[in-house]
Length: 117
Image (cartoon, rainbow, N blue to C red):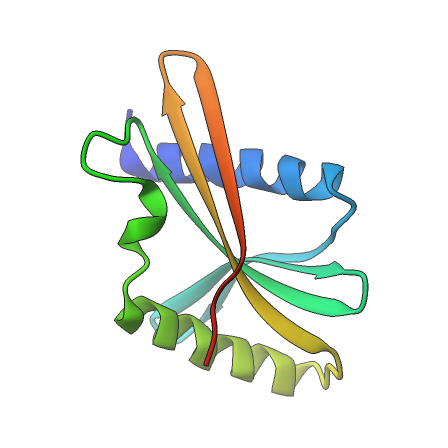
């Protein structure tokens, strides 16, 4: 499967998962500069920035392992821009959703508060 299609499918699955948990999706694929926030949502009184990682297997480790400290810093910087541009006054947390799509089976792992500034 093409990696862009795989990523989009993983994000669609993550959005459905988050909505079933009661989160309100505000944005998908918010771009700033060379970076992107996959999903921006609200959970209660928190703004949640969600990084989605999708793979076809975990043979090389769980997908969330791919969110390096460098990637985390980039996400935090873009989130700051997003918050400032929309004048948001909520607590913020950073989650990761790992999705494994393998021969029709789907595995989702949600890691709340996966990283922070």
